[in-house]
Image (tube, rainbow over all chains, first blue to last red; front, side):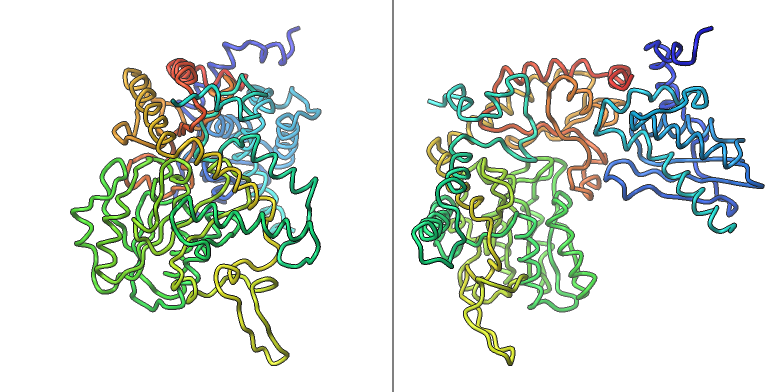
Length: 152
Length: 405
């Protein structure tokens, strides 16, 4: 059986996937709703400036939204992340984020749980762009940490 | 005759990396061998602190350090004692803003422009916050040039300082500093000039311009990093308070807190300076003056005109400053984020800058937040421009994404 790695060795498929998420990002546009946590990622670099919203109910990620000024990689990576994490339990989401950040760091990770996010497996080769691939993920990770603290 | 091939041999970065096309000279410049030799000469033969020692190597360091003041004074046409060494142009502009703030009060006005670098905006914003001064923006045309005819109108009695880039860092507009200074002085305002993008690219004569302060960084004129130059009219320097206090800048002090500061320029140079950097700056200044700043300026303008002529026919790009005769070329590839285009070019060994270039209020003028900046210098060639334009013409959204796969 073809593994998920084989699928993500097809350059044309990967390019299409990234283009699609860049041109038509999923879960794009912010909502005016107090139940969402919100994080603006404006200080990490002077280029990308995105805001990510997160709705967690009963330990499950119900929704993620994002918007802002962003390059192809930060837009596509945040879009793919939102698809991947919506509907997941917080614990599962944290595991996915951990694996994703490992992949971006060129460390060991489990490709099976990253699904479409495997498309970013080679971003580490563009060292100055690693932040672009993690900006949305960092926002969700930070909000999950902060909301976890409040529950304690 | 301008011999660019001979000049290229003077730069080890070019000799060691013939594959690279370096079009990021607005950020920093390559160093000629003579500058590197000046640094290693200090390390290898006469490492010592300055203004302290009685021994031979210290005296040699003193003399070499002091000579840079003479050489820079000659380069920009002022007196030796009007040259202060700080760490970079940012430090220079902060010193000017801090020093002048002592004579400012609420509702005084400072004139800057939309095209200024952060270092010529944020120190003034701080005075707005702390003192309640007004910041007003000088009218610019769409390529960032001061509209002289409208300048007079924004002056009133509240204007105390005009602080402007000589050559702007994104659009490359050469501002009419002399005419502007004449208007400012008629209204009793002081003029400070950020010459970071002008130094080493054109002849600067502070006496002729009649500006009150002017500053630049060594590293943008083939000199070492970590050295900034502040020029100030001597009587103004003598009245200005230094940001940093410490060794080397005081004449004497006692237990009651009585302090007598040294005269300018030493007054502004607290602590051990970047001695080897300052010494290296002499080598850089002499190197550029030997080639001739007029020749460098003419050659750069010729290169820029060639670049614009080659880029204008490309239908995948938009250029923001095609008509300025000098300075960087700022552009975008249609539908491609500037940083993605720059990353694509980097995979083709082409070094350019992308983003907002620290000019974060410029979008009010050109309508875009991000751009790609190609900035040329004395060692670039038309062959490099040919290769650059060929790569730029190939940039598409698909191509930029491919570099990540």
